[in-house]
Amino acid sequence: MSFGKHIKTYFFRGLAVLLPTILTLWILIWGYKFIQENISVYINKGLLWAILQFKSDVTKETAEKLYEFWVDGSGSFTGFIIALIGVCIVGAFLASVVGKSLWKMIERFIMRTPFFKHIYPNVKQITDFLFNKEDKKEIFSKVVAVQYPRKGLWSMGLITGKALKGVGDQSDKEYVSVLIPTSPTPFTGFVIMLPKDEMIELDISIEDAIRFAVSGGVITPSVELGENKT
Image 1 (tube, rainbow, N blue to C red):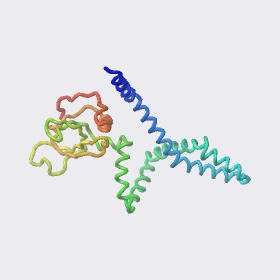
Image 2 (image 1 turned 90 degrees about the vertical axis):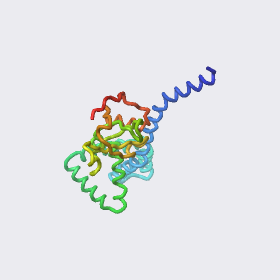
Image 3 (image 1 turned 45 degrees about the horizontal axis):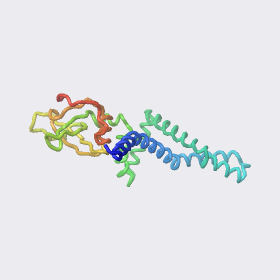
Image 4 (image 1 turned 90 degrees about the horizontal axis):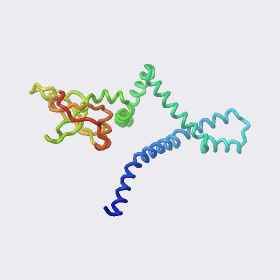
């Protein structure tokens, strides 16, 4: 092997090792900057306003120094911490009976509001899919392998429920609806309806199946296609 091929091999090997770490750090930094620039800055300005209300004799020079510390300086990290704590408090409140009831009232109001009612349901479906494990379990019951788009080609699918009424009425077989997710956005794909005995149930979790779809098959769960379990 020539020197150039050695360099190329070492480069791509190093890139494969470093890229996941670099991308992870980039996402974390991006998330931190997003919160700081869009949420924390307003929290810190609110803190500064509260401080100035209790100190009526603050000079313009002192106010500028306080602004520099709380908004542009090291004190700006306070807003980030408060934002994280606030999200946790909201999450804990919405987990309670009162919180759930209140949020349902707010959602009903949003669903009656022009313009918002056309956007909110779609956004909520995506965020629930990404962050709410309980909703994933309710939406998807099992991971299966089906022969799609033709026999001989196997695709991973997620059972979403029973087939539409009327499908399979002329047969004694039980039909189900299966979502064939597309990469790298597994919340979109094709919905097919087929008999249960024409699919293979896979012994992997919904989360592993989603990672498999998002990665385009790169992240493969350690599972082998077994005998048809249905």
